[in-house]
Amino acid sequence: MDTRRLVIAITPAIIIILAIYLSDRHDREPIRLLMLTYIFGALIAAPVVIVEEFFLRINIFGGTLEALYTAFIVAGFTEEFFKRLVVLKIPYRTKYFDEKLDGIVYGVFAAMGFATIENIVYVVYRYANNPHVGLYRGIFSVPAHAIFGVTMGYYLSLAKFDTVEERSNRNLWRSLYMPILLHGTFNFILATDIPLLSMLFVPYVIYIWWLNHRKLSQFLYDSKKNIIDIDGRE
Image 1 (tube, rainbow, N blue to C red):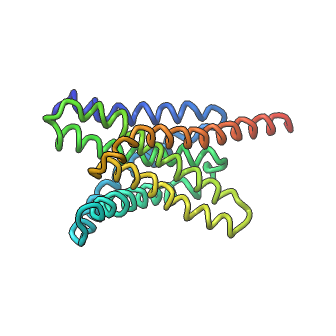
Image 2 (image 1 turned 90 degrees about the vertical axis):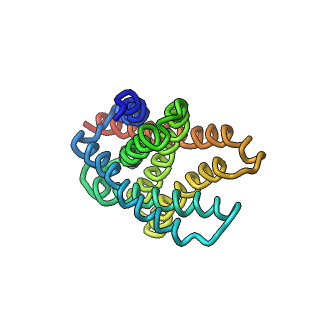
């Protein structure tokens, strides 16, 4: 194994999880639970590959429809379903998931676990002869997984802390299909041969980054306000 390529592959995800951990300044999550979420996020790479291979085998489409199918079903649905499953099964029902920001934190950790393995596969093995793939994926693909994790965690938190059951259930579904839509669009733009869509790739990445930065900022503010309110009552 090429150690230099391995470092290039894992560095973007490590930087992102450190950034999201340090941004949660007011009520940080237990390291053990965060690492468990990250590790299981990495382990889901195995079932993801199996399910994606199954979907590819039953593909009946061609051309643009095949690109849509691959982007939204093979990659988008499969990867976001399993990343969300990690959060639902591990941190979601613990006592530590006690504020809205937690959904984003755990969502990003699960996403970065998967992104780490995926990046190792692409950078170290599949495209080992391409000197630019590590840079490209470090700038676009790995941060994109973080963005999808923010979206997923945002709606999971809205679902968990909403006292209106109907609205909570609606946000629970949004925590699945919204990341799928973002992920599928990202992949479809890259896969299609339509020049106009290719021109929209960078603006799209900037847009989804801005959109999810607002979600993160909102929950960071809520977290700080909750701590101030608790201190004030004390």
